[in-house]
Structures are given as structure tokens and as C-alpha cells.
Amino acid sequence: MSDNTINRPIAVTIVSVVMLVLGVWNVIYSFTGVYAPFGLLYTAFHTLLTVVMFAGISGIWSMERWGVIVFSIVMALKFALDVYSGAFSYFIFLLLIPTVIYLGNAKKMK
Image 1 (spheres, one colour):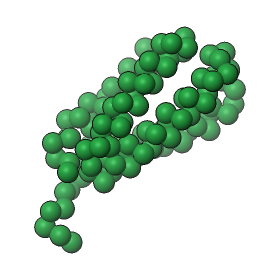
Image 2: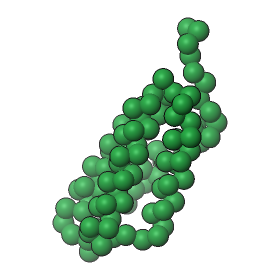
Image 3: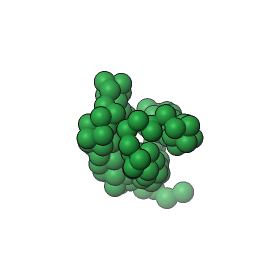
């Protein structure tokens, strides 16, 4: 181990694991046709954003600042996609919780 290792805060670990599990569930759930009322391309864009979110979480897991940036951009795009397609619900504001936790720990990242 090198001297410049960064310990991952427990909040980042827990939120990352929860987001990964929910992301996998979300991709599987999208194949049930539940998103069909929102248009043909909504499911594709929604799943694409989830996959890019996985990349951001991978960076966060490695304690890299770029992961926080990618995750934050994906969350903003997710809000925009839901508003544009008519799929917006106030439940989506729960996605601000991991974003705030990640942004709060960004200074600890390399």
C-alpha cells in the first residue's frame, strides 16, 4: 500500500452499494414495459443514463472526483429526461440524497 491511499467514508460506501443495487433493479425493471407510456426512446435513454451512472459510481468507489462529476451530470440529465418525457414524479428528488453525499465528500477524493 502506498502512503497516498484514501479511505472511503462509510456513507460513500453504503450509498454506492445501494445505488448499484437500485441501478441493476432499474435496468431489469425497464424491460417489463412499465416505461412504455413515456415513449419509445425513454426506456433507452433511461437505461443509458443508468449505465453511465454505473461508470460514475465506479469512479466514486475509487475515490476519484471525476466520478462525482459524472454522477452529478447523470442525475441532472435524469431530471431533464423525466420532465421532458412527462415521467417526472416527486419521488425522483430522492436522487438528490446520494448526490449531496457524494458532493460533500468530493474534497476527500483525488
